[in-house]
Image (cartoon, rainbow, N blue to C red; front, side, top):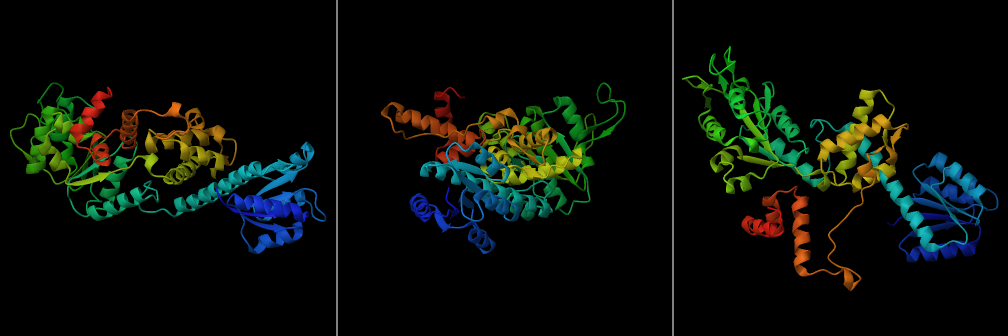
Length: 452
């Protein structure tokens, strides 16, 4: 981290030493030899951190700290105290100091404290900015995020909403596929019509067919009355087929015919019924791989995938994590009637580091838990689930300082392929595109790793 630091000490030699030493470590340093002029400088100039000695003529370091905290709470204060002076250190913390350093000053130790303070300010500013962004966000419900990936998704939604082309939404579980489907519906000319959703993996084949196409009275056991299918119920609006990749093989040709003819035949009927609904489907499965495995019809896939919307996993959306988290804080706090207004910098850092295998759904659950448990106005690290608190970031390492840590080239390749696959949420098609391999080659590699 780098930053602008104001050093305050009435010892000119100490100011020069800190200015030179920190400057060599990439930190921009301004010095003042009394607290009063330092405080006046803060009125018209911006600094990330104030580093102040305690014992100075006139206004001392503790008093300066109190003034800075009261008037510039966005600027962190690091206090330098005499070695072993615990009472002074406690007084500094009570005055609002971010950290304290004991004499004699070790420049590397001070640099670490400044780095942490700069990061603390950056996270505090980011949380404040995202809180405003959540307040200002309109029109896309909970589809928040300023990442390039989400900006592209919102732009695509705006362009396709007014046309009735069949749309396939893909992405990992928990990324918000139904939210996107509803956003498309709300912006379409069918917004006043019904939005009808069904999970194709949630019921057995015969019941799913009846739900989709309807049935006549007596068509099967317990069919005591006729029932209109969801295709017809969605006329004038949108039919959302969630988990379409789990559609039973026997139903796939029937769905294909319905999409081609814009008509359905209720179970037990000898006539067809027309419908006028836009079809939006979603899946977290790799349908192109399913086609190669003969588990999904290619002609049906092309009917469903006229327009393709791919949702990125949360781990690929950078700062969107904090914006979404702040949104959920406000939403859950209002629901529970608790005065929780934000996220502490420490908790924000943990949220950004975590990889969110459950995506937005997991984030919402974690924030709800934290709001329910917290005793403060802001969520702290202790309020987060254990798996998030204990998470340690890990990366694929292909270089090492020691020869003992080096691995064969084949092992480097294996690790990288698996890392790319993980980044794409297990999608072999997307992983193959990133790796520059055809899918069959990737399948063979995965098979050799025991990952068919």
